[in-house]
Image 1 (cartoon, rainbow, N blue to C red):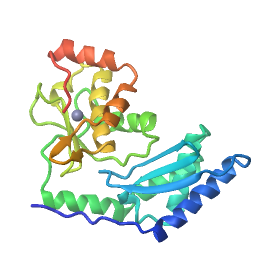
Image 2 (cartoon, rainbow, N blue to C red; image 1 turned 90 degrees about the horizontal axis):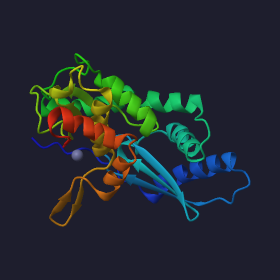
Image 3 (cartoon, rainbow, N blue to C red; image 1 turned 30 degrees about the horizontal axis):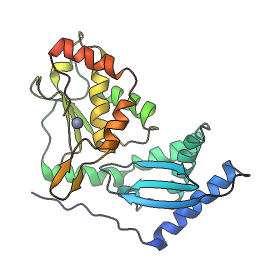
Image 4 (tube, rainbow, N blue to C red; image 1 turned 90 degrees about the vertical axis):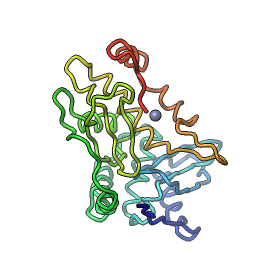
Length: 248
Ligand SMILES: [Zn+2]
């Protein structure tokens, strides 16, 4: 069954107040720097997600379309978080708290739950495994690599101990599933973390379609993966233990 997810198409009138928020917050943090041009774009990220960069005098703000209906006070909290990160300031705790609470709000979560219910439950075991806890690993990576901004999808261990697919992200269930073969004390946490990080990048960088071609691991995806500290070490561990180090 196909479920058409409601998409929020922003008009210029809708993005204008958001632009103003970024200009105002920028002015507060950098009173003497000339104001950049601000561009706000909404992207069909698979998750509540946000990015910011400042290049050649343009401040580019990319927001997941799921954030489109967020109230302006939430947009303001997010602007404070993103700009603080951009300028390497400490993130104001109150803004962080307000934004996290919005992501956890009933209607925001219900939307995802409804989609999951209609599509049926994903077969997987709870995130707390025998040796590793996927929720802890997810939240730790979220803090370290995604500014804590990634809303948590469903997480679980696969029913089968697959060696050919060590992990995958299933967009229809909005779930990250990690192969049970990794839930053993002899598998160092670093190796599980790398597979989880890879799957989180699938949420962050959705599949690109160009004509009939479909690119799952985009250029941006690969570039982000290379930034992972101890990447080679993690891959080497998996190769040695399992003879493979392939996430999906
Ligand atoms: Zn992949």
